[in-house]
Image (cartoon, rainbow, N blue to C red):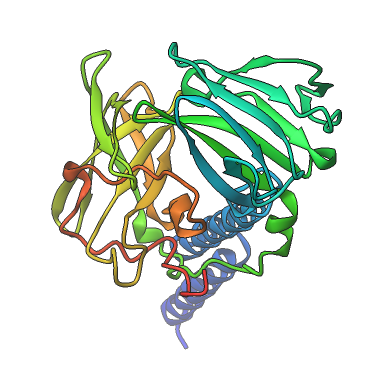
Length: 318
């Protein structure tokens, strides 16, 4: 072989070896685009699965929705409450005679514990005499605790009416709900959205399952794209800075809960961006108990879109 021929063969071998080295470098060095995508999908799946576990745990807490055992609307005047049938307000849990709830004309509710119940506590201290109880209208309500804290009672206000909400931690512990049915995790339903602010002080009339209407803070709307179309959702603000979206879609009443689902979204950044992870769409409390007062989706949030993500409706036993 001539010198020129040997040089040509050597050049060819060098090129082949370099190519092989490059292939080995891809395997051992920086990840390929597909490997990066796979890791992101796995991280997203783990995030959603952790959220699901935490949500199920919250439902079973002593103050969770599965602990609810009663919702009693209080009419003006005085009403004795307790588990005995002799009371005007008969409780499903707690002592036979808890005490007297007195709704006055000024909207305040006075509570006087029964003499037989020195163990009734408010803010960790025994209730020795008559006290005024705060409702949830002005933030955190006062909570009465009985039976060593296993039973609790608080006042809520909905549509101008006041009700006594009762929880029993033993009911939550006894509930057999081991999991919430859900769609498969799909990263395509994690969508970067755009927030458009409304004028400060804007509210939106929201109807709840009781048929009562309340004006709720409506800081703006969220716009997102899916399959070539743009959709908008009116957002509510429950006071923690995060957005609450109450949504109905084409799965509602079929695969998902008929009265809609809830989605929390992070506070928008300075550019007005937020993330809607529909994999975290959750059933409202009314899907788990008859004693909740769930807000329903406003007309603007009833989408002509099948959101095949998030929680599904529960079996009929729940």
